[in-house]
Every structure is written in C-alpha cells, then in structure tokens.
Amino acid sequence: DTGVSQDPRHKITKRGQNVTFRCDPISEHNRLYWYRQTLGQGPEFLTYFQNEAQLEKSRLLSDRFSAERPKGSFSTLEIQRTEQGDSAMYLCASSPTQGAGGYTFGSGTRLTVV
Amino acid sequence: GENVEQHPSTLSVQEGDSAVIKCTYSDSASNYFPWYKQELGKGPQLIIDIRSNVGEKKDQRIAVTLNKTAKHFSLHITETQPEDSAVYFCAASTSYNNNDMRFGAGTRLTVKP
Image (cartoon, one colour):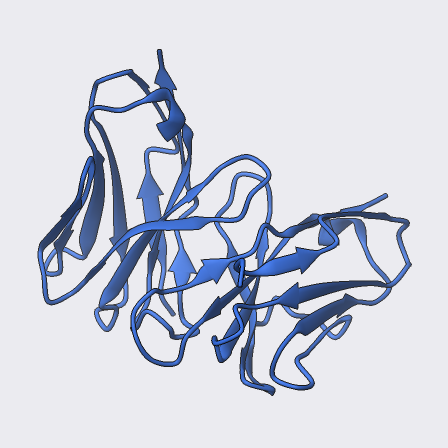
C-alpha cells in the first residue's frame, strides 16, 4: 500500500459543470475524511466516513456537494453546478480506528473553475 | 467548535538557525496536537504529534511543546536546512483519529542557504 491516492491531480472545469473526485485510502484505515484547502489557508473539514457510513458533514458542504463511500473502501466527492468559489485543493485523508498514526493525507485534487 | 490560531504566517531563517512556530487553541477538550509539513503540490505530511499527557516530545531536529493550561503549543526546528522550507500546519483534535481535527492557517518557512 503506497498511501492515500487521489485522482485526478488537477481538474479545470467550466462554471456550471459537474465534477467528481476519487480517493483511495490506506486499505486498513476505516475512517476517511474530505477537506478543502484554499490558497494561504489550512485544510477545512468537509465530511467524514466510518467505513461506508457518512457520519458528519460540515456546513461548508452545500447541497451541491455529495460524497459517497459505497463499499467502505474508496470514496468519491461530487460537486454539481460548479461555481468559481469552489476553486480549491480538495484533500482526502484516512486514519485507523485504533492504534497510532493520525491522519494520512493524499496529494489532493486541485480544482479550477473558469 | 475548535479554533486554532497559528503565527507567524511567514518565517525566514538562515540555514543552521532555529525556527519556532506557535499555535493556540480554544477547546479545552482537545488533547491531540499534530504538526504537518506541506510541500508544493503535495498533501500535508505528519511530522510530529503530541498528546496532552506529555509536555514535550522530540524527534531528531524537531520538537513540540505543549502548555495545556495556556492552551498553546509550539514547533521547534533546530539546525534548519534548506529542505525544511515548506508550509507548516498545526492542528488540534480530541483524538488522533477523530473527525474534529481543525487546522491553523499555516506558516510558510523559508530557510536561506
């Protein structure tokens, strides 16, 4: 296992289009998190999964955002009707339920809405 | 909810000097404090963490100190090298694997050769 993988690395889309990002966590990690990072800021929490269950969603996650983790493995984050304000780095992280280690982040997907 | 403040936002040091980054947090229930290093085009990478049952932790050239009474913690990097140049983020959470991890705004460290 090489860590948390995110795809694509970069996405440029026109305003109003839908986009979907994928995250593959470390295989033995049950918990998966999505964060958003804008330029010059720290990561902001969006949502969190324990296995396939989505247990918390931030107020930042508007109705245009939806996240899934159908089999408790990979996760997808979809943004519908993108807006310029959605331009950001979308980071995925995973962590184990037990044991040490904290969050392991992927390299992120940089979204640019034009 | 938790609010984490980090300063300075930028820090420039000469190679070989020490660098110190400070963070404060608001939620007294927080007891896990990690530090992440983010290089250009990459995600944050955990470099050191501390739990509230200890006041200081050291790993080679990096150390973290925690003052729970004052609700602040600091990252210390000694003998800085150019490859230490990156953005550093502090964070606070009630546990290493909880969904309440909140991050500071980051410190851009530049180490001049």
